[in-house]
Image 1 (cartoon, rainbow, N blue to C red):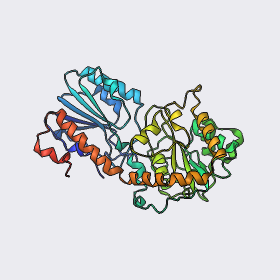
Image 2 (image 1 turned 90 degrees about the horizontal axis):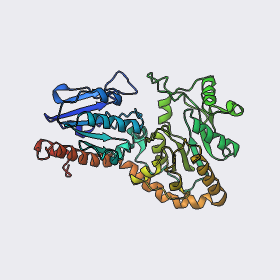
Image 3 (image 1 turned 180 degrees about the vertical axis):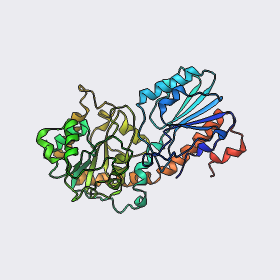
Image 4 (image 1 turned 45 degrees about the vertical axis):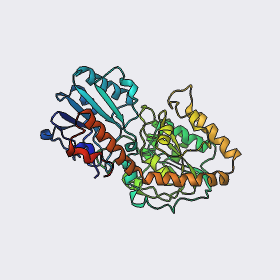
Length: 393
């Protein structure tokens, strides 16, 4: 497990507070246990910060993550902002440094002088997705130059907007020449890894999940849907590691898990689109495509994604999904897939290589985070910790 390097900064007047200190795949295992002697504490939920008793001059708050484990967002972005503001107001004489994996804008705290936010960039490529493809991440040979299918879409667990997208695929017969999966497992996390998003043998639960999430009775018998694999593995974690036959697809239409909580959070669905060499069409919270692009991934405008990227998906008058459907329909009917595929291929290779570098980029960012923490604590000259940010290391 590669843990956060800044966790090694132990100073008398610095308090570490880590939240979400458990492992989803092994809930009884606290990944980082509290160490009171080193001023390192852990709490299970970010909401517990409101009642936490801060006593140190400097306080470092961050989610308890590593490149071997990650966690789904524990709160919407707006809720996080309010929590951080409350503790800063409650302790005006103390200083707070918050390392945030979410895209929380610093300007939200411009009136508060005792709080700093580091909006972490490269750790947002959650290792949960990367760790499941890491064994073969060195191999570029799988990425195809020629593509025979416009898109694939692995929709996963049942979701209101995924159902809407699925209906469009079926209504327009797009399932005939593209690769689509919508198995409609229950998206609610379960503590038992064998039960978490497991596929049932009789299909009844999946069909009920579908109907509860904007499903249509006329399409119920199609669920669980998969038109490109002979067998759907019942275990969720087995499905994550399974290599799928989707290299011949050009686009990957991803409707992300947390698309309505204004939290930019990429699951393995997004990272696998890069891994397979697809053009990543990420439908999620406002700014998600832009966030991906800001990490260096190249997303040419075969469709005009900047037009809809900042639009929320769950507001009726905007109809983000309708804009995307219209753009895709125009692309499919007016362009030659061979021309787009040939143009896309060098971008796919560059994006794949950037994915390979993601851990290194994270390590470089952590050096700057360590420098920031030590500077904020007036301890940059402490030789004990200079190795954490020395660029020669």
